[in-house]
Image (cartoon, rainbow over all chains, first blue to last red):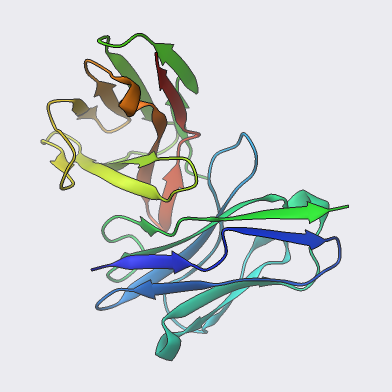
Length: 116
Length: 113
């Protein structure tokens, strides 16, 4: 069955610490991978996405993610977090080519709390 | 960018009543809309996929007679929770497919008392 697993439910960091949020997926066939962020009281926003090409993807606000096909992983990273990064982060996958095929399957989300 | 406007953002209703949630695509035509439900501390779960002008496709375990989806135009999709019960209390989010991925509504927090 198709699924997305996010390893951490809640991560607490101090400002300037480095961040890595794990995401593994189970999906047959070509995948498109996404990381979304949901700030308190706001809607989901796209951080970055991978469709094809360079497996290291850079997104907004200094985030990046690396697609490792052999590990079925798409971990999110940021070298130095800020208090404003406090939010919930969702990894998601869809199938097909071009990034817009089918529906998204989401992980359970990781809540990130950054202490000032 | 592609924007989906979802209303209401929160609603409280009595058991047995119906609630309608609207999602409008503001600057693009949404031929496909996805409706998700999110329980606390859980993932977004796809409830149904609606295509403009045709019947929605429901995921296994989702009652189509309870969660009525209408996608009569390219800019509007609605989800009506009929005869709501407390267990229907949840966070409902719509999402539309765009040319480069997906865009989401801001969500509706439904509380049934």
